[in-house]
Image (tube, rainbow, N blue to C red):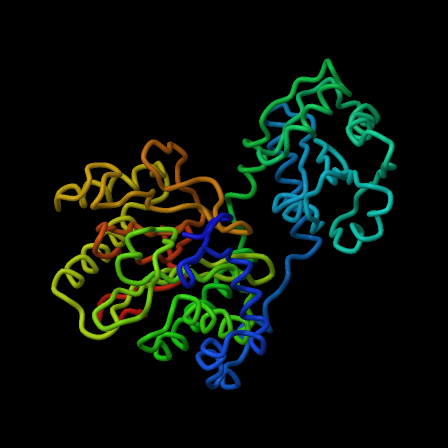
Length: 428
C-alpha cells in the first residue's frame, strides 16, 4: 500500500520512509536497542539482484516509439514531461524537481528534446539513455521559450500539446504564454497508455524486488522480540533488504490498535503477547518497486484475530479471481466489497470494514494508474500490474492487511508473491 506520503510510526511520532532508509543504511549510529535488533547474522544473507538487467537504450527507444504511435492515433503533436518517473521511463534522465525546469519533449516523430539549465547539462547527460537533442537555458532566460522554440522548429506548435499529468502549473502556464495559440491537452492517453502495460524486462525487475521483500520478511519476523517498537522492527527489515540487494522504499510497522490505521498512528506501540503486528514493506530494484503486506500475531492469536485474518485472505483471493482480462478495474473492488458487505462490514468505506481501495497500479512508482477501485472503467490488459490488498480495519481493536502484487498475462493474473494461507504460517 506504498505511496509517496507513506509514514511509519516510531516512538509515538511519524517519520518518513526515506528516514527509515537512512536509518538502515547507518546502523552503527542507531540507538543501542536498534543496533542490537539489527545486528544478527546479516552476513548470512546474499544479494538476490546481482543478475538483474537494467533497462537499456533499446527498451527506452521502443517506449518512445509506442508513445509516438499513440500520439498519431490521438492527434497529439508532442508530449511535455517534467522530472520524475515518466522522464526516467522514456529517457533515463534521473533528476530531482526544483524551481528550475528540466523537462523532455517527446515529438510525434523523431528524437526527443531535453530542456535543462546550462550548468546542469553535464549532470543531466550522465543518465540520458536515448539519443536526444539537449537545449539549455541560462539563469536569466525563460525555459518555456526553449520548449516553444523546439515545437516551432519541429513544426508542431499548431498541433495539440499533451501534458504529462504530474507536470507543475508554472511549466504549463509558461508554455501557454510562450505559445498563446497552442491547444494544451492531457497526455494521459499516451503516457498512461504506454506505462500501464509492462514489458517482460520491467516485470523481471518487479519480480526481483518482490523476491527481496519476501526474503527480508522471512529473515525479519523470527527476530521480532517482545518489547520492540516499530522502529526496531523496521530497522531489521530495511537492513535485510539492503543486504539482499534491494533499495528500501518504506517499512511501515503497526502494532495492536494502531494496525487499524492503514497508514500509521501517532500512538505509542510496542510488541507484546497477543498483539497484531501489521507490516507493509517494499523496495526498489533498478527503480522498479515491490509492495507486500503481512499481518502476524505475536504469541497466541485470539479467535477474532483468526476470523478476521481468514476473511481478509478470502477477500484477497476474491479480488485475484475477479481480475481477468477485459474486466473493468472497478469490478475487482466491487467483488471484494460485496463479500465484505455480506459479512456485515461497511457498507462501502465505513468502518469496521475496508476503508480504502482494493489495490493500485505499481511499477516505477509505488502507486501508478489505474486503481482497483469502484467506478474505474479501464479494462484489465496484459502487462498491467496491481497490488491486491483488501484489508479489514476494526477501530480500537486491530487491523489485518495481506498485500501481494500481480501482473496480467495472456492467461490471466499471475502473482509476484504467493499469498499466505494461514495465520499460523503468515509468510506464505
